[in-house]
Image (cartoon, rainbow, N blue to C red; front, side):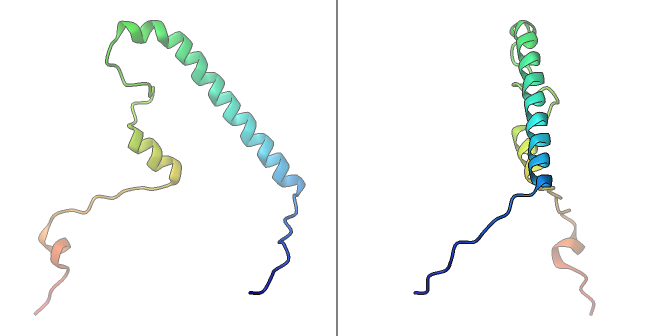
Length: 88
């Protein structure tokens, strides 16, 4: 088996700036979520069985699909879609 030299990755200034921007954005989102949770504790105890922690009404599956970029398109159950365009 041949041994390869380690691959060298170079860190650029743009990469660090992008990282800092994403980090600040995530921290601000977390802070907003914590603020909403602290304020929402009193209101959610009054409304039992509310949206289950998601403020925007999305299900867990929808949030995951959005995060990974998956956009499901249900297929219609019509005859042409099931059998294609058959021509005799």
